[in-house]
Image (cartoon, rainbow, N blue to C red; front, side, top):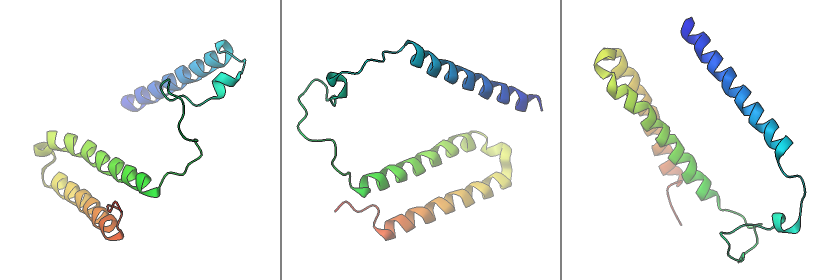
Length: 117
């Protein structure tokens, strides 16, 4: 139970820091608006296009698939470190986890999410 209390205290401390920083930025930050602040910033270059263009859905699909498989890797590293301690139960659970991810990849592949036409 001590570990849970420590984690809760850490989350509460992080929340206090976030609230404090937001309050300080509202209190100390500039409040005057001018036309220069309203312009889009493109590294000092004059903007060549409007910012109201639509981004194709394929960019979002690729981003979601990247995050999905990035999270898979995040789970694979700790599992590989403690693989021998987990035994057969750890192997079975990770095999099930990877099978679900592979099924998701096959589904995305069949739906054409990986096609860049």
